[in-house]
Image (tube, helix red, strand yellow):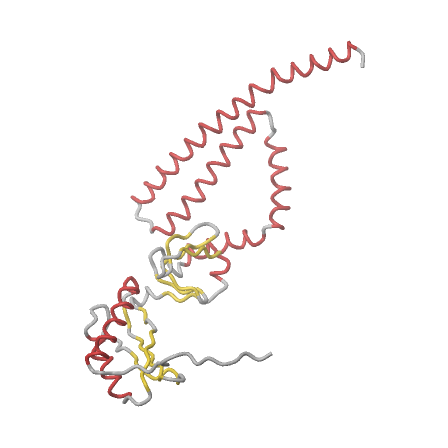
Length: 274
């Protein structure tokens, strides 16, 4: 390449760098400052929503949307400083949005389901719910998902689309839930006697609600025992306390009334065939 051409290219590159690099640096500064301002605005809006008395679930949902919108605005301003035309940018975003929308239909469905949950309120933050076979306390309702905390202190993230497509049981609207426990009784024992012993034991547990009355019945027949189902009603927030107390109370009552438990004395060993 001729020296004149090289000099021409270098001059053009230098001119481009002089005009473009300051814009990029300014855009970076705008993003850095803008995100900090957006974060502060999000907190102020959150405080304002709190003062307005809006419930926690709606508040979290609105705050997450507002935070996203503020960040998008910051990046659009930075893009305009660099020199990207808004019309071209919006056209690009529209085309990209269409393509991404086709690929992410599930996310859009979860977003729509989130709006449904917020406005129709099948549950709210703090409620005990069962979604399909999942049981837990609603920790938060977000744009795309609902977070539950199980009685075992596990956090479950359930897509909102899956929530609205399932049967939702809200235990908090009724104010109580029924726990389902099981104990064993040897065949030689009298079931009416054991049932009465369990009823008396449940009355000693402070967490057990007396109305509706606990349900006690034979659930199944095991190889060594009768399996008895014990189903008392409790307040949702006392799930584990009630479960532990009921087991302890029944064991104590069985011991005091000499209720025996059948079990195998050992393990029978045998040969392994070819």
